[in-house]
Image (cartoon, rainbow, N blue to C red; front, side, top):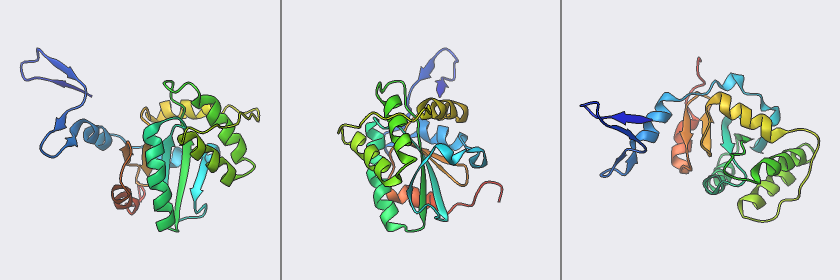
Length: 188
């Protein structure tokens, strides 16, 4: 997001913050303009948290080495316990700035093919800075999800997408997430 002054002599790049309300106006504008076509998501490369058959669903784009993702993971874990009908489809999007996230994504997703619980534990270990065992199953999940993130315009982790197609970027509170859960699916 770029801003230009009235004289058109100055271009400002960065965040615009309302000091009084402590609101990031740039993030709000980007979120308002960003939607994801949920129907186009291929869920085969996701890790499911919560109720796999849940009627409430969120799509979480996360990086196994992202500290903000780790904070949101704690919040989402609490929300899953409070909302028994919640399904969280996690797309691990390894960002370039995290050097080990690509192989960790592959290892976690390979483990998910055998045990969802064990894969979630590996993800939590990664968020806590604990060792994650290297594992390969011949599929480049990280590269595929990185490509998907680029196609969808997801360049920030964490990003949460809702059935309505709306997104929230960054770590958010349970209240903010819960408020978006009940919005109808886009086009319905």
